[in-house]
Image (cartoon, rainbow, N blue to C red):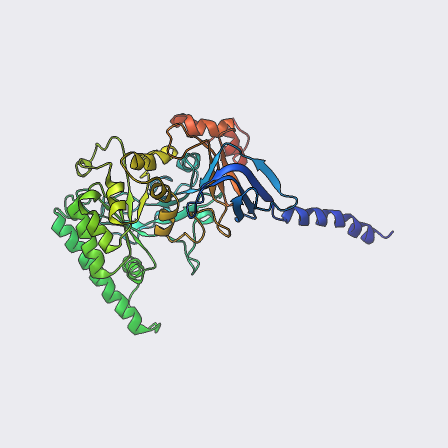
Length: 437
């Protein structure tokens, strides 16, 4: 046989092996109680995933498991959608500096350390999607970033994308005492609101010039990165995520939102119960924080544990967030549990972990519930999501297991102190930094 023919024959099994390996793996999880969030709980349920997506969710007696699927028995467990954290500071994020109180042009994208141990802590807590944002020391501290905690070597690889291909994110804003300081920062609440109003008026004028130019380079105004960002806010492309605590500060946010018509999510809202009806009437969603030790900030002095119940009773949409490190990502489930303890209904509390926050980040077409066609982001729990004894056993992101409590290294992350979260030698070696020493 000619050499060329032998080579061709030899390549056939290799090509076949590559083709087979490229086929999507189908995995069926059986025996668990499924809590889809978008529907009723399913005892002895079946969750089938393929190629990073959910293909079936239902009871064992009526859900077909495809031939050849890998079956994983998780009897005794509870499976819920991956948690979505609307407000986190993992990744060593940073935004604006001390030069100005309003810096919407700053991008946390340019500051994130993807190897930060916070990402591992988040996965250990069952978090699969995160809104990364800068601190609250500015009226506008910069652009936030929505990320999926898949494996990746750069922040761009794990960032959500908008329809136009750009990375997805919001705008971090704040009011109250955090953003008050020596000039050029405002010294009063009134001045804070005035500065914000003036900047949005400038953005409206900039937008009008862009529209009038209609793409004509001779008519286009000089580029202004800050105003470009605010035009995205005015257009609804970018949502404002607004740090606010005191009830009067909350009303100021609602007042500005009504004036300029942008989309906003209220964050923290320590005194939400005092203005729950006003929030509900404005149809503005709330991302709450509930901590057991509110100290460190005078505005959080009156943080009420029944804020979640008050908002639920008023008809407002509610989510929870970690504000990590304020609440450790590994303990995120307790946030909703504290809400239930103070009177929030279990169903609404469960929605407040994956589904409501995914809507606030505009990612609910991919995340937030166990539904056919959505990303296979879910967590396997040892029991009741609201029990202090329940552990996160596994965290799956787009059909890949990203955390496993049975793995000693992962267990050290879940239960250990700070030292357990430093990069291991094997990880350094994996990323090509030479032999472990």
